[in-house]
Image (cartoon, rainbow, N blue to C red; front, side):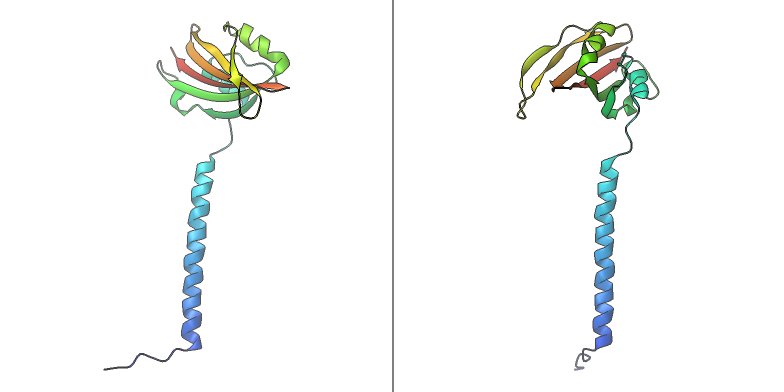
Amino acid sequence: MVSPPAPTVRRALSAAAWLLVVLAGLIAAVWGVAWALEGGPQPSADAVEEAVHLDLPEGTEVVDADLSQAQPPMPGDRAEATVRIESDAFGAFIADNGMDAPLLAGVTPAGTASGVIPAGCTDEVCYSATIVVTDDAVEVDLTVTLL
């Protein structure tokens, strides 16, 4: 029977180098998955306005949007967007789009008012929305189906 070779510094350094390579690969894989889940830049308010076929007031901020199902626009396609509208412009948003008055439903755990904009349809889309009202803005979570 042959005895195992004696441990040497060279073998120890080689093993340490391989472990570092494997660890670096694992870290790179985790970073890659996190980067992929992060997503890309949000579309502009003009792009969201064009996709959802609703008028957004000047100064509207896009918080999140998934317009991929509405590209290219076909009847039955859906678009989802979360926009932040200044409180002063929220009434104009409701009026410009012919929406019914929002219904406040309660309070979020953070203590802000929340509610819904009753579902409805225009000539181009049907929509539903939830809202969260803060001191200076209203966050509107829109779901739109193209007609």
